[in-house]
Image 1 (cartoon, rainbow, N blue to C red):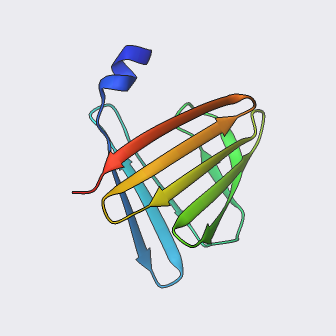
Image 2 (cartoon, rainbow, N blue to C red):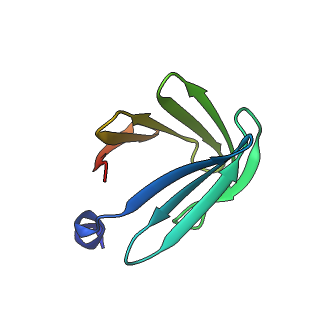
Length: 102
């Protein structure tokens, strides 16, 4: 499963409507979308099926998402003109993925 996951090239799109953001991730396996307001806690079901409480903040070009649940985690999404760098940290495990802008 890990090899299959590494071969997938998902598309990530962030949109804003008023003060509500929507983050959509689309791949050949699954599509997920979360809608949120900065600084407001919301319920989320993660791609691996966990139910968590999340809060997302914005500082400069970085969206930081704190997920509270059985496995607390932090996702930092750093946007530049040419890419998105996503860093996921759960306990002592860290994963970094880079997406190219299209």
